[in-house]
Amino acid sequence: MDQKQGTGPSPLLFFQAVNGYQRTAALKTAIELDLFTAISENHRTPADLARRCEASERGIRMLADYLTCAGFLTKEHNAYALTPDSATFLNRHSPAYLGPTLDFLLSSPLLDGFRHLTEAVRKGGTALSDHGTVAPEHPEWVTFARSMVPMMRGPAEWMANWVVAHVPECRRVLDVAAGHGIFGIELAKRLPKAEITALDWANVLRVAQENARVAGIQDRYRTIAGSAFEAQLEGHYDLVLLTNFLHHFDMATCEFLLRKISDVMTERGYVLTLEFIPNEDRVSPPAMAEFCLIMLATTPSGDAYTFSEYEQMFQRAGFSSSELLDVPSSNQRLIVTRKR
Image (cartoon, rainbow, N blue to C red; front, side, top):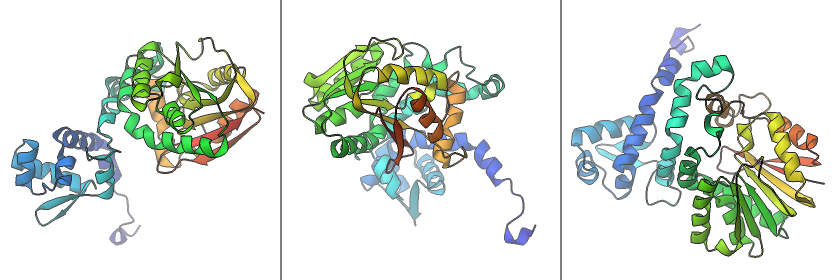
């Protein structure tokens, strides 16, 4: 190896990984201090930012310099500025502000799962408990419902526009594990004749109903409280939304749910499945492939399944064909499945 060319072994990746908690803490602190919002308001020097954020000038300078090194800010002379990504996602004034998502992404169940990751690897599933985050009526899903709308709004809007373009005649929609409800709500806003039925735990559905009222579609928003695997489903649905749900379970459990869903769909109905779906090599693209470790740490048998695995699940459950679509500006993909 030619050390002069920088091609020799380097411990850089090791240190970046081991020190990853520092980047998490710095970003969390900046959001708590409203640093990015302050910079967007033209408070750009350490002194100005310290007054706006009610912090020490020394502390602000060190934090802002670190965030500049990390790629969240730029610096010229003694003044900081937002990158395009930070301006979009970390500025409280932006409609795409992601600050609230920290309540879920850094919640105790997720962090505790990774604190016990060695045990999970040995076991082949979460070491938290027998059920992990998929325990019945787990309170963390209320946190999810209240905090994740900013992250999911873009994919929800894109999916709703896809439905309007390709299945505008759909009238009855089942939103499985609806959570915050934003996927069904965005669809109802674009299709005035569509009626949404949201299925989730009762404590989570209260959040979805609040969001439906804010959106003005509460008269067309129905709910079914309970487990997706046990709740009684009736009627014939033109469209079923399965967003960020199947990855929590093993393939046999997913297939059981898909057969149950098939029984209440119209013959020409569609299922839209939004998921973290890596390529067949399971290591690319990284943002999708890495999701498997979250499932290992927090669930008994969940995974980041490939498209071919989802395709097999749907086929074994009696569905006809599936198509994979990339969701713009997202680390997720959409599977469009026809019943017949």
